[in-house]
Image 1: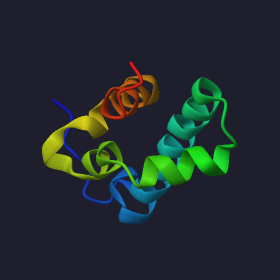
Image 2 (image 1 turned 180 degrees about the horizontal axis):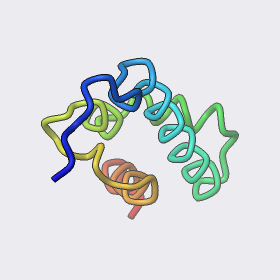
Image 3 (image 1 turned 135 degrees about the vertical axis):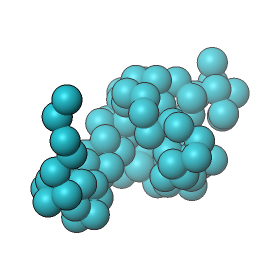
Length: 81
């Protein structure tokens, strides 16, 4: 069994922040496409949503899902699905 490495760079808060920013970018690109919005508008709408708050809340488990699933959650939250 592989032991976890306490110096694993992927566990760094900075790396985790970069990963989350990348995921949010992918989610918002998908929302911009689905809703025919400018990416900046999609980003603003997403950041103001409960879905975004849940994505940042580890207890919700939403961070475990991919960008398309999270985009679906946003669409459901806004009554667009």
